[in-house]
Every structure is written in C-alpha cells, then in structure tokens.
Image 1 (cartoon, one colour):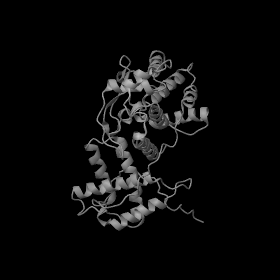
Image 2 (cartoon, helix red, strand yellow):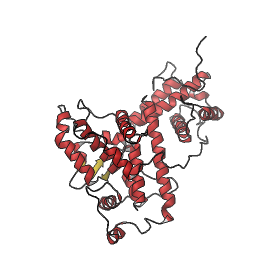
Image 3 (cartoon, one colour):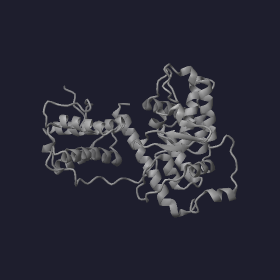
Image 4 (spheres, helix red, strand yellow):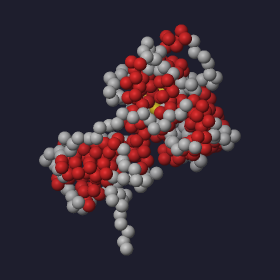
Length: 377
C-alpha cells in the first residue's frame, strides 16, 4: 500500500531554482531573489524569503497554478486558509506571527512583480493578514537562573572558557546570535566598555554597552584561548570554533541549548538572553527607550518612534540597571540613580511601552525559529 503524504506537508525544494518557463513561478521567484541580492539584502533575508515562497510555489503547483499571472486574490485567501490549517510534525498549528510572515513574503513578491510590470495588477495588495498577537516572550530567566547557566561551562577547558565568554556577552549586551558570530576583535572597546555591532538587522550598525564582568571574561578568553584556536591568516573574528572558523548561528543555538538543559532542564537558545537582558533592565528601572537602542529596534508597535540616545547616557543606564554589569555588585545610591533614570522609569505610565517591547522580542524569536527552519536545523 503506498504511503500517504501527510496533508499540508511541503517537501523541501531547492530554493530559488529557475524553471524552463520564462513567465513561470520558478523563474520569476529566482529573478526576484536575484533582484534582492543586487539591492544588497542580507543572505539571511533572501534565504527566509526563498523558504517562504517555496511553500507557496509547492501549494500552487499542486493546484496546477504555474504562473504568477494566474494568481488572484481569492486564490491567495485560499492559501491563507491553508496556512491556518497547516500542522507541523508535532501536530501543532503555525503561530499567527509565522502565518503573517509567510503571507508577507508572498505579498512582497507580488508587489515586486507588479512594480516591474511582470503582472498587470497586484492580487496581494488588499490581502488582510491575521492580527499580530501581543505576547510576552516565551521564557525569561531570573538572576539566579542566569547565574546557574553561566556556571555550567568548564572554564578550565579552553572551549569552556570561550563559551563562558560567549554567554556573558549575550547576557550583558542582548545582541542576536548572528551578530555575535560576526563580531570582530576590533569591535570590542574595553576602555570605553562598548561593543560595535556591525550590520545588525536591516544592515544597521549600532554601539552597545558591555558590562565589566563580561569584559573580564572576554579578555581572559582573548589572552588564554583565542591564540590557540586561530589559524593563519587570522580572520579577526572574535569568537572562533575548534578549527579556527567563525561560529555557525545554528551550532551556537544548540550549544546554548545544551547548557540550558544541563542547568535548568529547559529547552531554550541564544534568544533567551536577549529576552532576559531586556526584562531585567526594565525591572531595574531602565526606560524603554534605552533598551530599544540596545536591541537595535527601529520602532515598536503601539509606541511612538523614539529618538536615538547618547551612548554615554546609555552606558550609565546599563551600569545602573543591569545586574551583571559590574564585577562586584554595588548598591546604587538613590540620589545618583534619580539623576540617571528618567522621571517616569518606575511608574505605570510606561507599561504599554514595556509590553510592546517584550512582544517585539517574542516576534523576533519567531523570526529566529523561521531562519533555523529554513536552514534545516
């Protein structure tokens, strides 16, 4: 008896492979991805769009729809319902954020087709998306839990010392895993206590504070371990793998997940430190504007667009509110803290902004999961 394919399952396809039909879906998707490369979109963004479009391509092929010109708004609404009914391997449905993301990639594709006159009109222009849920991050650690995770790597082992420096950097700065993998030795300014994040999301650079404790572990790693891992010619990457190569984001998530399971018997990856850093600083009284600057968010839903803040002020707020910013925990003087923090840092007026920030972090975690899924991790 032939094996039945699970309803809604989409086999993996080569991403962005052109087809024989010059007006066919495969050819035009390939042209669209090439256009993105010419426009200097990041490879991660291109890969995610190709992955989402591969689902749509397969769905269309199963229904005899081989050209974008054949797609209408009712057809896209059918595809939207298919995403709603889709079930993953564990039987769980796709999250509404994931559904929105996959529909958004399809809409971007058709917008480009209409703009370049490859189709007469854009059938996705009036497509209504599912409402984005306003959720808090799936998991946040408290201070004691963070310390338990940080204590797991064996710092007597060179790779364990490297991993401790990585975890401390995640906890102190809240940067993304892909941003950490791209760090250069020249991006760290120990004298100023800052870290330069190059080409973050949307290829935007930003400067973030890094605490004294994290700096001490990174300095120890640089002095004792990196020289053992580096292979000439030196790539100048800050954190190196066993063979002197740059770290892979997927591998890094698995590594962090191993430490999380050993310390807390919980499954979580690099993003949990981003959630935790933002939450603990909010609880410590930091204004949402400063955390938004650290995280590299251009804007937050349901909040106003905040102006950029000075790095000196950001460093002061980081040192005053982050529990791991100093080598030895110091009590903050009330008068000094009052001068450094905004007047409304601890009142309820900023509750909406804080919830929006945490909801944005939760959406980022979904994007990171999508990126890992696209890479087959």
